[in-house]
Length: 349
Image (cartoon, rainbow, N blue to C red; front, side, top):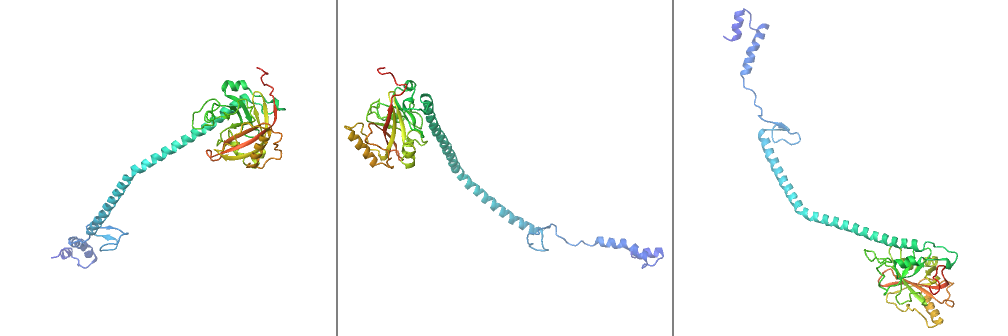
């Protein structure tokens, strides 16, 4: 007898009443518990961004997941191999580029150091001559030519080769003049005797073929054309008409005489040109003819006040041209006034 009927008979109630239906619920639960559960995947996960192999959209079975994992592993392994190969190639190039970088840094450091040394050389060379000028020729103005005085004792004590001083107002030309045994002696050696360093300003020097007291009719004075516009750099700049006109006067001082000179011509000649090197003249007509030749060849307009008839003594300034080795800039000047300086040594001293 089924459990429902037994219960109903024992209780004396009909089996289809409400109480019978409530009592039957446990029996239904037991029957349902005994029934097999519906089949479902043992392993599944959702990949909404990847199209599923089978089943519901976005859901993988265990087999699908294994296949996907194998595929992804292969791709990852391939990527790892490619990355390792790329790193190996980069590693192979690394020593070369490291060497290039090191060399570049060394060159840069050396260049900066060299520029510093050169810059110091220019500064130091200028300071040497600035100090000398401050000591020996501090007063640049005078009411008369004879009033210009130079401390010759201080100069000769420092350099026995001292023979004079040259000064051109409005320019950087303001230096002692020396005379060496040859015209090469003071190309690198400065007034103090220093020839070291990478920058050689040398000294302003009188030609070794001239008389040391500058008693010749034509005296040749040399100086370097420096990049910092010192020494005789301004001589070349006077190839420009405006620069020439702005500095027509220069002075040459010696222990025995002061000279005021006026420029009358400027030329740029070949370095091998020797026709201009005339230290004396047989007559005044020859001196005038020399001046006329220089005026005719001048790179600048000849001044209206240039006077060949009254000129008796000349000073010629020479420096390097723009190409340094091939040409020379030559500035020609004639003496227009001379005077015995106030501190000249006594006659016979």
